[in-house]
Image (cartoon, rainbow, N blue to C red; front, side):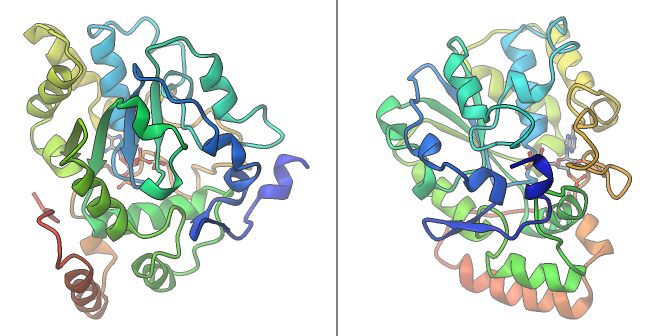
Length: 295
Ligand code: PPS
């Protein structure tokens, strides 16, 4: 099959979760993936700040030096476990197998879809969460430009699918709350997109401490600058512009789109907002997890 056969395909269900069709093929590779204790994971529901955090982690690891970061795309420095682009080379899991430790690994997987030996490794995890309304807007625009996802339809149609978890990787509500619960018995640094936006240096320092690194103020300031939205938007090593346009069409909507909190206000009607809030309250009633939809 060529990459064209995977364009705008419906999701394939994997253990009850809607999965990007191209990623769902040969799922054994994910179940059998061998995690290592030295791995450091960045785990998110899609569109929550994964690329942002990946770049931050990699810069911290290299003490703020940008030598490697200027030449190697983020997809190779922090590969996404489940990613597969048939026709364009082997799946990321094969690349990860050959990568020396300590590896950074990105995933959007919900807990039940993790590799079988995942918890045995007791690896460090950084989880990034973003408020549901901005995620819905970002995900909608991503589905418009990312041809490996089904066409999202109108925003009104998409919002219904988002609320019922019929989007890639399933329900946002389940994802953020189940990973929040896991924090009780596993080393997870749980961060919020809105907090990084509000005070990037404070949050970058948390990541540095979690990774067991010591960087001076100058290095931290350089990382803040290099991971600002504007700098990342114009950086071809992180903005996904190097991918073929039959996969991602940035003319429809750029991957680095707006990078703000509160864009949902430009999309939600009053009626949609009321319905979303009522549904949200039901689904989030049993958790202590709280989000900000504006900062
Ligand atoms: S993915 O495809 O799930 O890995 O996407 P992800 O990287 O998680 O999320 C993409 C959104 O994050 C925004 N982004 C940033 N915001 C602020 N600052 C920085 N540096 C930054 N880098 C990426 C990106 O613009 C997407 O959000 P929207 O709201 O669509 O702009």
